[in-house]
Length: 225
Image 1 (cartoon, rainbow, N blue to C red):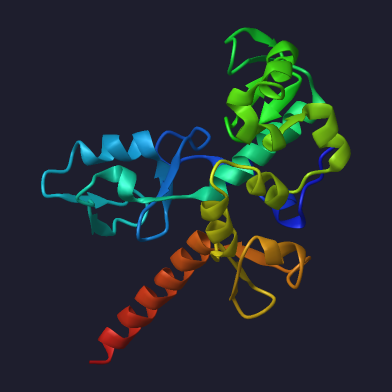
Image 2: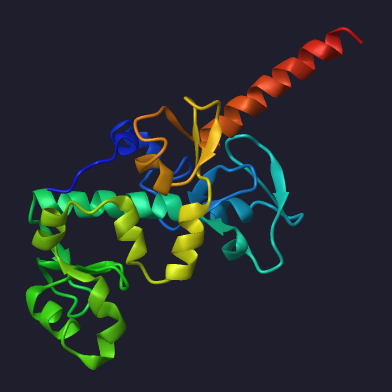
């Protein structure tokens, strides 16, 4: 069975829900204020905006919509990897029907391709690992039973995804802070190293707390002017 990191064990179900649709994040995007939303949910928010800006539904901070559109907002690879980790973890525990990404049949899938980011039935798995067409996918295509036996971590899963260069950058990007070490920025790799077992805080939550504290202090200062 796949194992959870201490950080993953401490997260609630709401952590993985979009504040707009209240469903699990789908293609999560981060605004400059660090709050995250589904890409489609951001599109719905933009539809009511007519001045080229978007207002964060949570903190009400406004930011300019990039010239290239909403897709230019940062994709939250940290959240995407955690959601993928959770989905795979569930697959280790129960063999439910899933749609094979290749033949599109609803079957009990036996493998997963990290480049396709989807499940494969047994027959399509055999094609995937033998066809020259999928040569670059083969190191990243594993049977579910093998993944369970290997106890893959979130970092190992991320290393097998489609863009190694992007993942390396993402792994080194601080998405967490360590409360034990005075809110020191922490990348995913260090959650299993120097900061293993520490009090880890998502940067989005920390930013919101610091912003609230700053506004409170500014309000107090304005009273003494």
